[in-house]
Image (cartoon, rainbow, N blue to C red; front, side, top):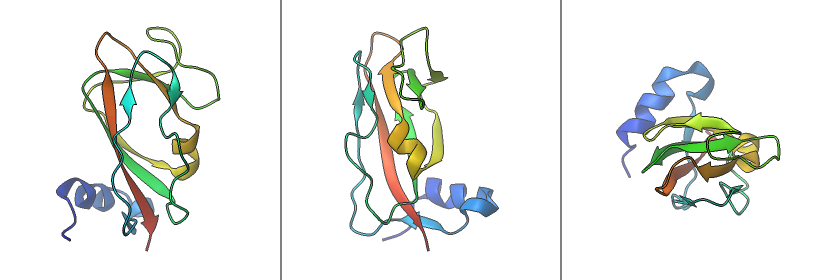
Length: 115
């Protein structure tokens, strides 16, 4: 399977992430973010995953990492529609999200590991 362009660009951009590749035999995940604050991942990442690359699609969301619930328009970091990033597995596991507007959003998450 060919490496997607977004992933190739990501790993070229950071010496810290230069050896990150998708975890074999693990499908991407597409959680919906609605008006109820919830973990971004309702399950543990694959045991081989050290990082997760994500994109946000559909709407803006608020995200917290400290165990508190994000609140639309008030609490949490604002991530805008189209945002993307690469988080360590621990940060991804701690992330809680809620939509910041009337429309639902969804994350597209790919689990990565160091080769």
